[in-house]
Image (cartoon, rainbow, N blue to C red):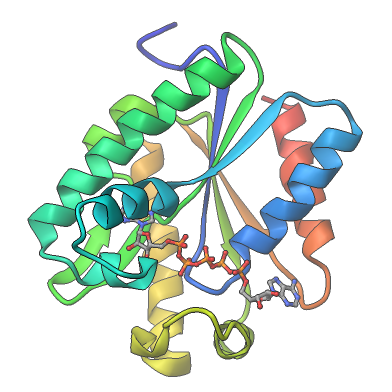
Length: 205
Ligand code: AP5
């Protein structure tokens, strides 16, 4: 089984920037700890940002997607390796690793798969969750989230296209490790309901 899965369960949570992944996952974390579930939640971009800031090549995480593409690939591959190393230390042979990341990243060089083969070979996901919402709502959430730079996503039409690429990319990434794909709608004012939907799927793994 080791070549098909990690010893702990791996759930990858994707969605276009501003759809509310991090918000939904903070609810998931609270619910999991209230039920004594062994779960850790990591943000893929945090691992990439830490390395890139350590090298002095970015000042904020929003600069990652504008780095030279080959540098992004190097950071991406290293992040996947470090996440599994960290989860193995924290979880041992049981529990659930949840990874907050992207199935597709918009870069000046084109759309970059967030979960290419060399990343999947390390993460071996049981499930890939795609969080979605209406493009109009996502643009409003992006605008409310003042601490982040997301002005380059092309407004409602840009987000609509990205939603479609993101869902397609998640499905493509599910094939090599037979990961299930779960589409979860993050309704306005109801991030907890989205978290509960993810939890229900986790219980079936
Ligand atoms: P990351 O930090 O993951 O980028 P991001 O998606 O732009 O930001 P968030 O994840 O913080 O957005 P979110 O969708 O979680 O929204 P939030 O919960 O904040 O990644 C940074 C970078 O790392 C990427 O750009 C990329 O370069 C790189 N990277 C990452 N993974 C990679 C990979 N695999 N390969 C290559 N590169 C990778 O919510 C937004 C707002 O909405 C908030 O104000 C919130 O309060 C509100 N909100 C959320 N849900 C609701 C709701 N239900 N109702 C009302 N308001 C809501």
